Amino acid sequence: MNKLRKIIIIICLAVPIVTMLGSCNKFLDRKPLTSTLDDLNQGGLEGQIFGLYSFFRTSYGNVSSLPHLGLHGFRSDDAVKGSEPSDGAEWVAPMDQFKYDKSFPGARDYWDDHYKLINFANTALQTADSLKLTSDADLINLAEARFFRAFAYFDLVRTFGEVPKIDFRIYEASQANVPKSPIAVIYTLIDQDLQFAEATLPASWGSKFVGRLTSGAARTLHAKAYLFRGNFPMTLALSQAVINSNQYALYSPYWKIFKDEGENSSESILEVQNEVTLTDDYGSVYATTQNVRQSTASGWNLGWGWNTPTESLVNAYEPGDPRKDATILFAGQSDDPANGGYGRTLPKAQEDGGILFSRYYNKKVYADPAKRIALNRLDQAGWINQRIFRYADVVLMAAEAANETGNGKLAETYLEQVRARARNGASVLPFIPFTSKEQMRAAIKQERRVEFGMEEERFFDLVRWGDAVSVLGPLGYQDKNKYYPIPQSFIDKSGGVLKQNPDYP
Image (cartoon, rainbow, N blue to C red; front, side, top):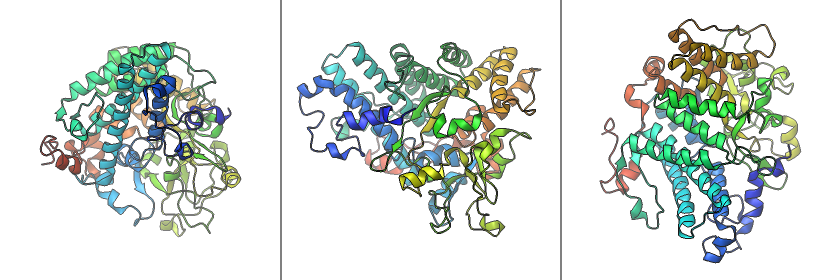
């Protein structure tokens, strides 16, 4: 599919959002979005919404950069900080060893940019309300704003626990100085926002707006929010609504999901849309942060080298599981063209007498060398889309919820769909019949780990299952580590209004 038709290009070429779009500076000579009511009535609300997409894509603390990788990835048993030891050494203790630091900049930026996303959404909602915008197109814009607000709050509530509820537009900084709300209150807002989005967003945008939010994306996020709370009936209902919509299908073979040809495939429910050309950069650093790091002279200066797989993840795969070689690059070995490689052999790791800082790298963000050369961007991969929600996640959520609500045979069916796609006709990954709820639960847990390896699902899965202490305890994890402390700088600025999490006095 021609990526120039993606929504991210429309954002940067069609709508001047001066205050939100870091990569559209050529529009700085245009009038500010909120300069007049006349401006707003000529597409201004949709402009704000497209700005939300761009901020979601490019901001340092939302989904695409190191704070996300640290809090969602390094804290699991699937990945570590990576890179060379001296690069970002301050990330190791809080993210890999659970020595949480109230002043850690990564958590501060994560908190700050999530609340910026919330504020931009609230501003769009207030704009529509003040101008009494009620057309079908306007309601879709409101649903998009409410989705992004719910997405940000879901990240915040599962990362920090109780957080301030701000569901109104901020005009003065003092208005944002509010105390934390109970977790249930935050989830009520998430539920309300996603119910509206589910009922309002279209099932598909066709080729006009590839990558734009849909009702399927809203239901998927809502299912995840219910699953995290252990509400299995609602998880099952929402997951099955996505399945029964017939908008999505598992894409084969597995490794192609993560290649250019697999972007916005039948499996895609939500992807961050990125595009880089010889002259323009509408990309993100998500893939670049994780690609192999070495000297330019070595030919392996492909990125920053962060978020590298662990030996534990390598050993988690069943014999012959194709997902292993589609997920992990092995130092000193071929990149395996049969599973998404390009016919190159990686140098050995330093610990084996070579030059690479790690033995393993994330193959799901491994870019085509020919494209790097064609774009003259040898040390980055900013054009690779970031997969946020995949249909396989919906199928496995449905399997888990079905099992927990007493329908083990249905869980067996859903689990087999994912395993069948993974085996792709090979004599591996045998069928797993249901024998008991406990047996099926263990099988689904295992399947989620290998299906979503290096996709930042593992840490929060372990927390919601109650397995984090037993699995991550040897790395330093304690039960209190399910929540990160509120960044101290925001505690200080609040003048005592914002209280620290009780486990971090």
